[in-house]
Image (tube, rainbow, N blue to C red; front, side, top):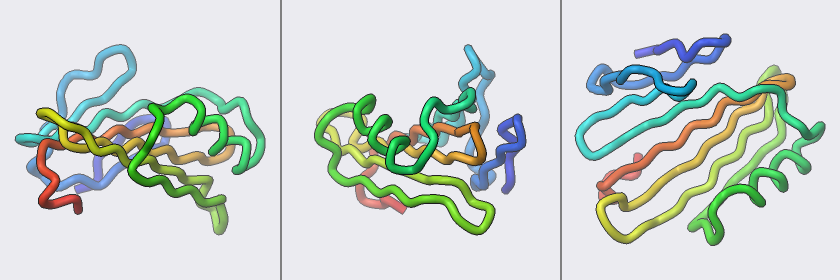
Length: 118
């Protein structure tokens, strides 16, 4: 199901995801054991893909389990993601960034279930 995030952004989520009240510009959806936080960001301070990825990598927690980034093409902006595995109630988190023109969208997905990473 396509859900509007405002500012021209949208996301596809299954109907099971329930949206909570927005707080401080952060939209939150939840299903049992999982949370998705979304922030629409202001203009980015870097110009090219390499600068963007390097800047994000310096701001995120250290030692990701994995990361991927790709430059934009065919009308799609730069994309980057960092995956972290944790001990405790939250088993993993995925920080994702999408850039189009000078704006970006940050998504942070957390889950207690590592059996179904899809």
